[in-house]
Length: 168
Image (spheres, rainbow, N blue to C red):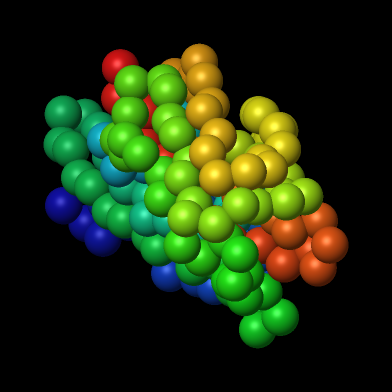
């Protein structure tokens, strides 16, 4: 098959936190399906814009006249040197993970003034809450997939990020 007809996800790229980038081809009428891991995220498009909070690998599968090819691209997110783990947050345990829509956050010491954000892989905030104490239960009534749990110390504005997998 000529090189121009193979699936193309784009070149691996590094972006800054909060930026977006285009992956794939900027042409129409290609039968392409996009995946993040095993989760299908788009269909019948040759490329898409992504805005991420964590480094992510995407896979595109292209079917052209019965010939199926795949390609992948890694979008690395540069979170910057100023973002570091908080002393009060770095020993937080999230359990269970993967989960069926309910998680518990544990810490051996009492926490105060911590904001919780749950983001989908496009960076959209889908849940906010607060964490004070040593234990916090969260109900995550969302679709199966990978999510980002962001914990922010509201006093210092420093944060840590954890990956959460929902598998119902």
